[in-house]
Each structure stands twice: as C-alpha cells, then as structure tokens.
Length: 200
Image (cartoon, rainbow, N blue to C red; front, top):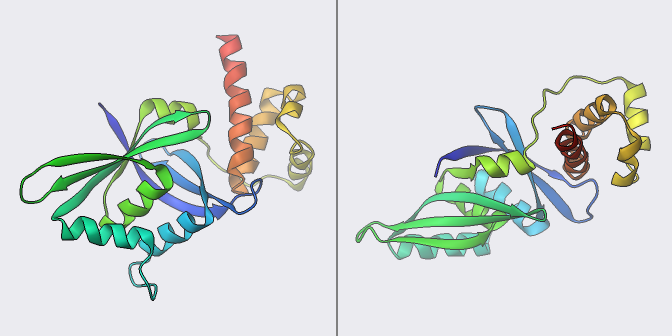
C-alpha cells in the first residue's frame, strides 16, 4: 500500500474536551494536517519522548515497553495510522527482530503508537484515505477581530453551521486551526465535505 509519511507539528490543549489534547500531525509534501485527540498521559509521554534530554525519575509505561522491545532484540520499524471509524483512529506498530528478521504487527491506540515511535525515531505513516477523511489543508492568514467575533458566535454547536455560507465556513475553519481548536475545525470540515458531496 502507498503510505504517506507524517511529522509531528505539535500538541495543544483541546478547546472543547476537558482534560484532552490535540496531537497535530502533518504530511510535509501536501501540508495536510491530521489532528488526533489524545489524553493527558499520552500527551505528556509523547512530549517527553520528543525531548530526548529529559528523563523522568521512574520509567513511564512507554519507556518500559521500549526497554522490553530493545531487550528482546526487536526494533520499532514504523507506525501506520491505517483507518478512521466514527472519529477514532486505528494504528499498527511494526516491529522487526534484529537477529531472526521476524516481523510483528501490533494493534495499538494511535496515541500509544506515536509515543512509541518518538522513542525509536521511527517514521509515522498514514493512508491517503485517512488524509482524505480527516485531514485539514489550510494556509493560515491573520484574520480581523470582526471575523473572530463572528466565528465565536458559531461555536455553540455544529447544528448552527447549516445556516452559514461556504465562504464564511472556510474563514471559520482557518480561525479554528489558527486557535488550535481542532475539534471545531473537524466539525466545520465535515460540514464543508457534506456540501461538496451534495454539489457533486
């Protein structure tokens, strides 16, 4: 299968889900961004994995599993985000034994898979279908305060989006990504996709 490699663009606090964070992945060639909602522990673990010079006093679960993989003569080859169902991402961790060359594929939550990938400097991939379904492609420009005020009035729920023009929705989408409110951005993008299907 033809996979698309992703890089980690950052982690931000979720604007709509208390105690949750948004992991922002990006396909460098097309600049399509893939926001994934993750928990507090996973956000902390990914951040620590990215900061190679910071070591917690006791190993985190992902550190422990990484040590086990290495001790068993395996290496983490890659992580693949292969599917999204009802807003939930599905991922695999691909391992390979350094001696026997045996390959193992483990099903994993995307947050855990990424936390492991950063510890092995392993590439993160996804499919074009996942990018089509959940990716966001935007060139972010500075928006006026008037646009920000109008946008804030539409944030009460996705049902209000039906009464907004496509042009305005595009502006709201740009604002949501600029403010790192990826949950709202996904809602707006879903509405835009529905409208495009109706036109097609």
